[in-house]
Image (cartoon, rainbow, N blue to C red; front, side):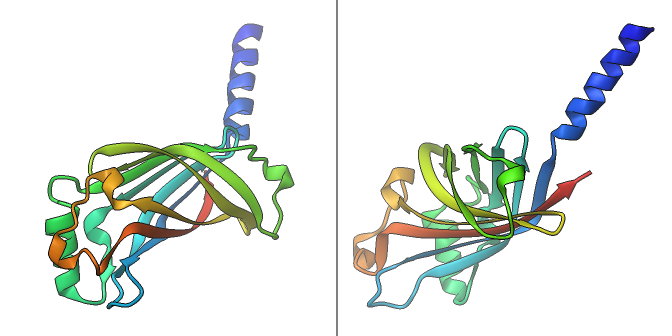
Length: 181
């Protein structure tokens, strides 16, 4: 009987200390155009992210077709010609926020390094990015800005638009993650 009690106590203690924070309304955006032309930019406001504060593990999922463009023709070309979103409907990231400590976080942003794997169009690429983390009421706020090369994910840019579309895509993510009970 003592063993059972001890087991349940340890299990519940471990479970309680493993706080998870999540969102389904994260904002991920990108800019993929050269400065001299009409801006190619889009926003996805339904990105899903989860952070395990005890380990620093992070996972992000977003659906490619949820990127919203100001010009509908750009959105159509993005989904059909560049991202092939019917074949590759989602992009994912899984990684680890290095040296994450909830006790050290405050309302002031603090830079952290994230090491992980970004998967776009079924192609996995190891990445290291910096993010700013801070505490918010009942959660964490995370912001990051980084770039990837279109060629790393086998995104083909036709010659006719090669001088309009940047080879380097700038990605910005802003997630407010709240404690999961």
